[in-house]
Image (cartoon, rainbow, N blue to C red; front, side):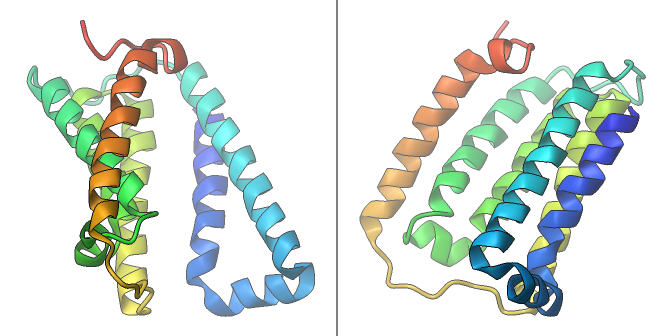
Length: 184
């Protein structure tokens, strides 16, 4: 469990740096744009690696028993999350309307997984992502970090189709990548 917690701290600490504009700028001044991006990426991967390793090694400790229907709701929420992940990189109405589709997608993904998993490692993992999404959304909104762009309606269609396609692929790959079958 210790590796999971260390990984979560590293991963989210680096992901809050962009919200600290003064600190971020001082890092960019010292490291340069590419150096900053490289360090951000490297530290993110270290955190992610520790999260994956720590989660896979965590002892099973029941915190609560998820409802029987939780798995089905999770599948629906994750489908929407994948579409929002795709929309976050598009210039469509979805992104314009929701303002933070990536963070909303992370929130739905994490909340869905909390409906399907009641063990301590899952609560720490998915609860951390839900908490991060809520805090970063609040920070982004308060700092006015909202992209301005001209809407391209085709991007919404592309996000829906692309997100759904990746979702279908991930449903089938989940047992091999994560070790847990989605469909039983």
